[in-house]
Image (cartoon, rainbow, N blue to C red; front, side):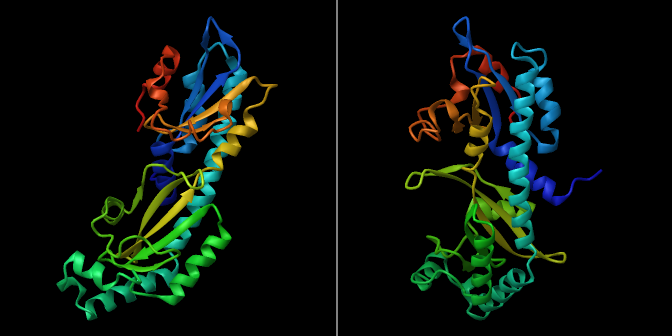
Length: 288
């Protein structure tokens, strides 16, 4: 059965960002015994993969159950947010704004200008302008506060509307825009805003009017709430700390240090480079 577009987006986000590592507080022979769920192509596969990865590990059924629960709650969180973003990309107001932006760009002969000339022309207000779309973006953010920023471009990558002004007017030369335009969706790497200690992932979705692509919606999702999910299951009774690891090995959550900003998303901390041989084995398989 062909997977839905929504499942494909969720799968991309999960495979790009998340691994769940359960580390018992009990240390055996000086080495912490670890159990891992690899969230790969779809969060729907996470339960089966968790059990396969855990197998007959020392931590046994308790670790498998906790790992399943963490994976499932992360999937529920992502599912709800991705449903929001997909619905926004299908909004008639947003699609019409992208089309109107293209008409305005053509009427203004923007394609005859260089990118630098366009940037200079729109230096003060980096958008073609759609009050209706801008208002709707703010409503979207109010209704789904885990998203922090939204923006819409026309088919040439010119900003049409946004919730907060981006640094550039032209997005068509950005990787996220090119990938979303070609493939329909692009999920960027997690980034940490040091001013707020919030971790965000940018999700870019092509806007389609029937069979015609008309623009791109970019949504910046705050995934820091996954730390609350980790906290929920890191209980003394179960004896687990929970670490959520990005595909590149950097930490997204670590209950053992209360998600310290000195470790989370720090370039100096990489679980893939851990000296713990058990972690190396568990993280080594295909990370998607």
